[in-house]
Image (cartoon, rainbow, N blue to C red; front, side):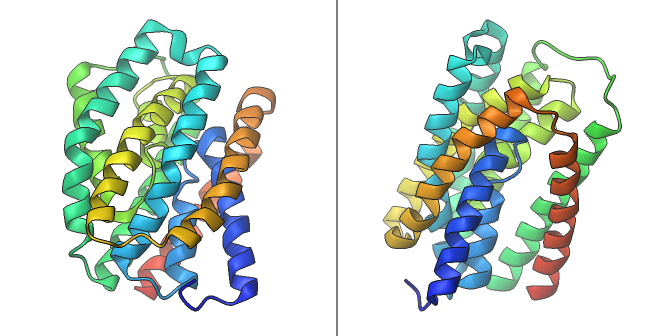
Length: 254
């Protein structure tokens, strides 16, 4: 598996588990497998993105089922937002894949670091405005623009929708659980389209995708339980700190 040692492979599996928890508990989390693959393996940027994005097909599908079961995706307005986001991914994700096959390792690290920093900032921003007015459905034009941007960036670096979509939706006023639900549905489309694109370019390491993706699936269920059962303040603060540190690391490493 790309020359990684046994401890590094074990660490990648743990990163997958923690990333899965983050996906359904607070949104940002799906970036952790991408960072792990970038830092611990000798994969090229396109291989990192392709290997990471394939794991989000299953995590997005499982997250969608979980949030359908808990009722969020049965709500008409939430489902409408989710469908718009998923539809825009059909255009945005292919553009991201094309760009992802062309970027250098340095550019990949800088873009990934920027994504991580943006997510940390958005999570922090929403935490500072806990009593802001909540929306039932954000303006359609805003959702389209958000969906195109997120899916394109996701295609470049191999992340799922929740990484950026959840902080963005909550920042504009959508409740957290609805934002999480919408992002899971969007992630399925981003990951499926992205996987097909990177498959054409032959840049998916399937053994590594399985090593990261299976623990990630288990983490998705744990994260969904956390989102419904526990206060997320401590987890959110830990996530903000971790994302800031990782953003600096990626930019310096790149």
